[in-house]
Image (spheres, rainbow, N blue to C red):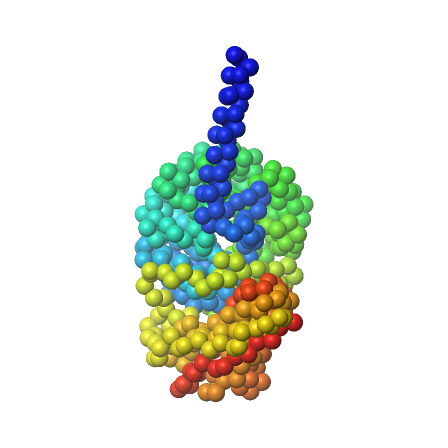
Length: 464
């Protein structure tokens, strides 16, 4: 009797565990999710964050930053928001931010900055208040799980009582799940994000276990605390040894509290498959203006830090891979239209951006086709996108060509190497998007200028 009872109990327990595992898997597959130390897309494809932060809450009119960040190769942007410590970002504004991310094929890490330095900095909000803010935005966040990561609170504890971080973070995660959020959650470390007391490192396993969906990623900020290769390597290794997911949610090339070892940070992140997000695009003040990556939000004026982050060894341009969710056209958002990427906020379109696409003939074996469209247009400028599709066989590279009839010029491009000779344009794949399976597709984008007419050219595609 006892034996049969134990056996039956074991069978029930096994079934229950199987159901739980399937439920968790189904929940995680809603969008971006954690698997061991890795971040995966809903289709199981690994995704490694490579990008920067944009201080949207203080510079809400700088909507061109999204396209400009993308143009330098980023696949992710971390967007600074506020729920009231500064001018609050409304649901409609956040919806528009998500729209800008999707238009520019970026994964959107939304972070609440109100919690910065809680316990040490006057006016800082609690993680409880941060969760209240996210719950107030739930209507515009639901359904965006493929595109949005919720960074619950930036640097949620200073150096006073950082041990309280553990229970506060568990409670915040529990409330987010109870409210119905299916998104991947990101949690920052205490000690102003740098975790020099190792509170996050030593309690990460229990915090992760507190998430019923097991879909939380930890974020370390690396500034002066991480000024040696040994410190950087040891911290990253601790999370890999524990089998827990970690991203470098902020870092710089210098700081008032010490000189971060950005070379090791970037090299170790690349070798370990760890995401990183530099701080920050532009607009820094208070003595840390050196952390600006471009001057006055001008993408053509990269600072030394910007050059290092985007174009240097193990930098964004050479290592970022676009999320595969963008292999198909982004879902059309219900948000109000965003300001066009290169226009000032007051600019209004002077012509329709919905010119009909022009496609090259369908490709056969070792062939490809390309479709050109104008995705946005304003007085004197436009944003274009070309989708490349492999034919009936896999290809290892592609080249798209076209000739402008109206004197158009391309000023910036991303996800392709674009060159021009007079009115003739040649676009070639970059290292990470040349290989396409049979029938698979990828896209590249660009900004351009025109004068008078902006007709859609015929395009051709050749494959290797």
